[in-house]
Amino acid sequence: MTENKNHLVSVIISVYNGEKYLAETIESVVNQNYPNIEIIIVDDGSTDSSGKVAQRFVPSARYHYQPNCGIAAAWNKGIELARGNFFSFLDADDYWSKNKIQRQMDIFREDSTLDIVFGQVKQFHSPELSEEEKQKIWCPDKLMPGVHAGTMLIKRKSYFRVGLFNTKWRRGIFNDWHLRATELGLRMHMLPDLLMWRRLHRANHGIVNRDKSVDYVRMLKASLDRRRLRSAD
Image (cartoon, rainbow, N blue to C red; front, top):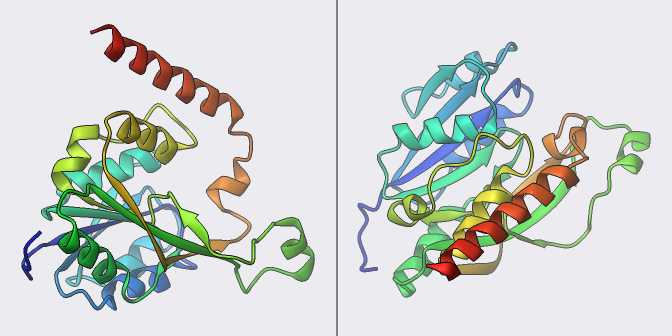
């Protein structure tokens, strides 16, 4: 990729009743040291004050409200509204390191054949948790490779090779999408840099919905079926 300051990155933030953390999340995008970002906040039917928090950032961000349809539908709506030639995603309770987008764009500039750049994640207990609650939610001390929607930066054309997020899954939505991307042979790079802080709190989607096994088995079966069809062609 040649040096070009006009590479617009569309950052899609989905929120559902996330008023407590949303401002910090948006600020971490507003404060990125990469200069060409559009922020799209998709409010997936929140009943709290998430909408009011989000609209404080207009016009720096665009705000869209829709009836509650789930994370996949919210991400897909953000994609529909996005104008950038790169996409990135962020949940309403996590936040980014200041150089997240710039660091990833540097890698794309170094290797134009890449489709996706990921980075490392640091998990942390949200400050409002009691010591007893913290004991119940495992929080690793070390950085972890973030094969996660929140660390991903992807070229627009590469995203559409894979297609939209599948709204039939209740959990593991990004896992399903990543499986499809892997099947298609998208070229991925994992940075050693800390790019995202993942907040652990009482209402984490992954903590509230711990039993993912049934959906994951179905995702793996669907992946195997797709591979068999391709090999038969």
